[in-house]
Amino acid sequence: MEREKFIWTDHYNHPVPWDSHLSPLTLPDMLMAVAREKAFAPMIDFMGRKFSYAEVAYAAKRVARGLHDMGVVQGDRIGLFLPNVPHYVAAYYGAMMMGAIVVNFSPLYTIDELRHQVEDSGTRLLFTLSAKALLPTAIEVMNRSSLEKLVVGSVAGALPPAKSLFYRLFKGSEIAERPHDPRIVDFSRLIDNDGEAPAVAIDACTDIALIQYTGGTTGVPKGAMLTHQNLSANARQVAMIDPHKGEVDRIVGVLPLFHVFANTCVLNRTVADGGEMVLLPRFDAGQVIKAVERTKAVYLPGVPTMYQALLDHPALESANFSSLRVCISGGAPLPLEVKHRFENITGATIVEGYGLTESSGVVSANPYEGLNKGGSIGQPLPGTRVKLLDREDATRDAEPGEPGELVFSGPQRMKGYWGRPDADETVFAGDYMRTGDVATIDADGYIRIVDRLKDMIAVGGFKVFPSQVEAVLYGHDAVKEALVIGIPDPYRGESPKAFVTLNSGMDIGGEELKAWLNPQLGKHERVVEVEIRAELPKTLVGKLSRKELVAEEKAKAAQRNETE
Image 1 (cartoon, rainbow, N blue to C red):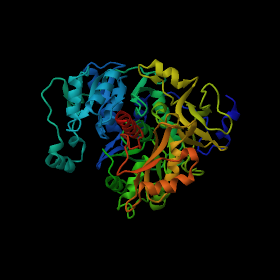
Image 2 (spheres, one colour):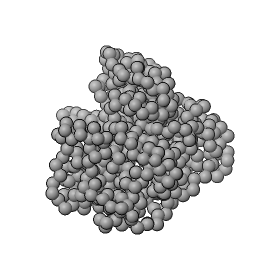
Image 3 (cartoon, rainbow, N blue to C red):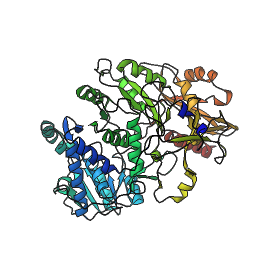
Image 4 (cartoon, rainbow, N blue to C red):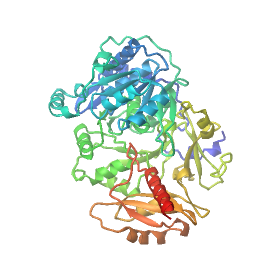
């Protein structure tokens, strides 16, 4: 590939060469290498209880031996239906040591959502917890699918002794009864062995480590097949761009590990760097603030809605965040107002990046230090190539200076979709993968996402980018969150409509906001309505989600048509 196509190489602001080499590496080998070098260093802090690298590595080896004894063989799919608990880490690496393929499932899934993905992936065995929010769902799915066994852990067993006793005494209402069923095995029984499992030969570049389902924002979720090298390379790419690599590395792990963002930027990145994860089972702004203060955490990855929630919490102003250096934001565009307010209050830097399930997590990021362009997703990670394709014809590159569909290539690019060769044909463009996001690349090689191809609103032949209208809305002091969608219009095909939530103490009507907004927009961009809501729909990771609003408006339009 010609050098002039890679404009960022002449202006690269990450602290390593763009063409840094990343040799093939499996995830278990990555963990074991650190466990040998830093055996007694803390790897996990779970509610105050510490687990060293040696302890986690030994637990993973015992999971591997236990799975072997249960008949699990290389290539079998092993599901994790777990929140952020130590069991997750041991099961994740232990299953991979056996050459099994991990499948991540959200703990918030309904029975039908979980059953569909269990069947689609062919998951044989599922790890979960003895919690009422999880175990009954897992049992029901086992009774209605090809799932063969459950391995059930106890949260109390992973807590410090005092907290463990408290949990057993006062959280009994949250603990689910385990039925006597030979298909259900206690986690403690599974790992009651010496950890000596037969060695399995794993090809880092071709063997699948993880099936990670997409968010399904534009249809039925698809399982991205991520190899060991995809995941280990992306973890190392993220670790490499930290100019403070080798110093104190303590990260708050409140983003859910079942999601690819946290899987790479919290779990695997931390292992690649030999750091420590402060695991929290769920997001609560007050608990996050306490965790940062208690552990003197250095990193806090999150999605924009998390930073907004922290800003809304009364304890933030007086919190001691002096240890906090970098907050990595991803999953959705970061409003500049949120970035600036959070940085001013905490003294930390919010670094915005970009990635997707099919990229193992991360494609690009702003530098931790130096030129950090607000509103951009930064420069490509080391070893990552990006370019823009014509929005109307993906066989051609976009015209110079014009927005185009962002495509990328690199060691983190997925192998393909599980059981979906039809989808592979449409998503790959040679060595590159299409993202569906429309972007621009400036003279310094910094990328800006303009919008998603599928989110663009067709207004009488004109294309409207919702994010551009949302950016104007965020300029109003009253607006906390904003989403713009296209609603059916009998004359123009579609018309833009805005949905917003308001900042605390603000009182403004939709018509007033509309009157403020529309004069700042092009004629075809002007919204037909601004609807004020108490909250906007979000994905499982906390990203604002348009699909629910689109479905609502389509249902309203259909109902109107029936009554006319």
